[in-house]
Image 1: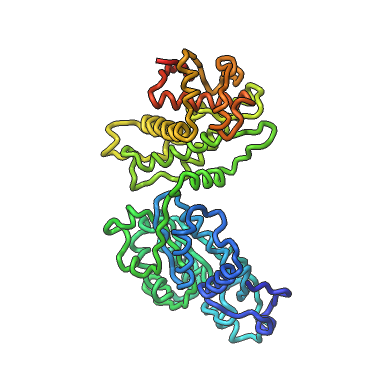
Image 2: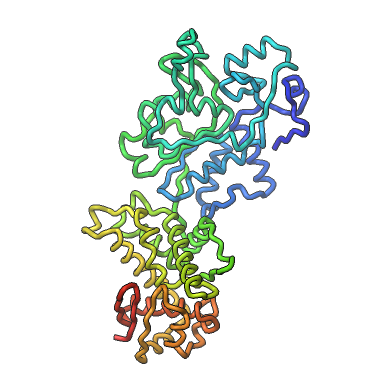
Length: 473
């Protein structure tokens, strides 16, 4: 990647340097190959796409294609698009005239202002500025976007000043021309107005701009990226066929294929510290339940699968669960804070609005009822795996002896210890935390087992004012 030591400030010095003019796609191609050759991580923070999405993106970049990322919400489409900017040079030179509408290539200016200035002045008088990588990426959300926003419009103020309507100087350029030599992304392409879609034809194919019928020809150099949901992209009439035909590569994204990958994404994106004055210890089974809830929602007949269930559901629920545990720890002066099943009672606030119900299949169920059903199934699934893996019969046997336990998100952990004097050795083998050594950890394990036994119809449950009492049937 080119990093000039003493950056040239005029065109003469630039020609004397080792800088070479490249198209943006060639620049990305060359930098990508260098990073690939050096074994560097190409897409930091992207999890679960190594064998599916990433190879397709790699090939599309090497092919010099404009890309469409096709997938449901919460599948890292926007993040992938933004990460492509890392394959740009750290900075590139441009003709630094205040009146220049674009960041023109000093060797190949396309605006009339820059072409005329270069022709009329010696090279040492042509000022050169440097455009940083982070400024060469721009994106726009399609809904509400007008032709003038991303392509351009005749500027009435310039007309009033006496400039001819057919002159290039009369134009106010939109985002795409202004991103000449950069990357421009449009999110939710099917929501883009048809008139704007038509305006994209020439840019994708001919790389020129036409505004109000005036064919102001520009050799626009830009990498165009799009994102879309399959349900709307494939719906007839939402995206003009000629526009689809001009997109070089379609990259299909997907949700995590394994729960472990979903947990990894959840923890990475939640960005919540578990340290501090009131540290939090999150048992792995609690993380599994949070992610399993999202996975089951993606399969639920009550949820609109065309809309999808974003990873943001797991992320928001994980944060809520940790916050509930920390809230209890501060109120009861307990350390560490350990999330319990009863903390999941607060997930309504972070889940509602993230599940779009299938109106044909919901049978009048509310979003809250759907969440309850999915959460109960997640507990049943995860607990069933623990029973199968570790054999928790000894624990079930303890409860079969008539133990009656009250649980709740604000009950002190010591209350659980009083009700459960004897902790079987299998607990410490079954859970990755030491269940017998810490009251707060034990309380979390107790609630998990009780909720699991209830899900398997082994114990009964009564709920009163946020507190739950489990007992043998």
